[in-house]
Length: 143
Image (tube, rainbow, N blue to C red):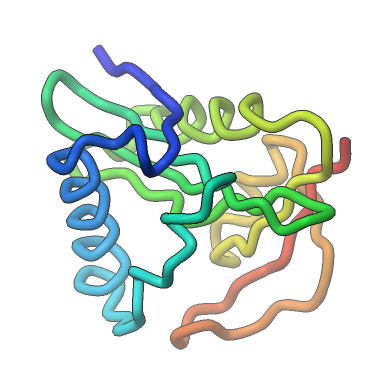
């Protein structure tokens, strides 16, 4: 059974923050071989929200919601390898979408996942670009 919670950085326990960063590093930096600075300072912003999916005492997945002024931005969407292919990404993203309702939501989808994001209501919102060698598609959910 998985639970989803949404927290500001200040409400994260040190153990949860560590697990969140460890999962993002495991998947984005190591598994996807994209050396980049994950700790970019945006986790600390007062309006940033962390969507946390737990399975017992394990972090199963996470996403980050950023306040970009006129839009919300969802990023760092990730599931642990043990929790993939179980429909949990839908649960995680729906919780992120429901957490912010007053503005459009944008994201940069890894292009192979653009179809999945489209099923959640996102539409292409710009030209494909490369980030860390991976094709990405800008997408928007209009509110």
